[in-house]
Amino acid sequence: MILRIVSFPVYATYTFAALSDAMVHRLREWQAGFASLRAAWLARAAGLGGELRVRLGTRELTGRFEGLDDDGRLLLGCVDGAVETIAAGEVFPVAPATAPVRR
Picture (cartoon, helix red, strand yellow):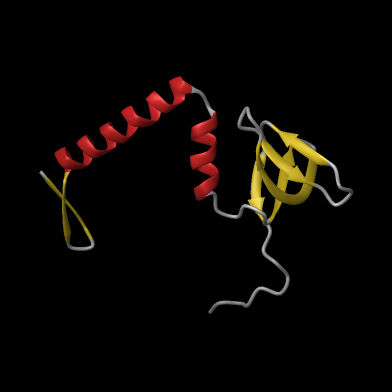
């Protein structure tokens, strides 16, 4: 069976094999500990250092995306200098006020 994405043939069996190999690699990393997964994720994280808005039930915070702690929780640098550690919440990027409008 061939899947077609933008007129490029993609074979399901090859795609599955590649995804399976990648998953085995990540599971081995996980067994060795979270540190290498955290480092790999942060190396590719979109918006690192940018401003975020986080909704936590009835509370909302805005701050800078500082990274992840050793347990994978979001580190949010707040205006007052405090760093909030967030385990769960709705996270949204905040567009800078000076960003050009794309049409």
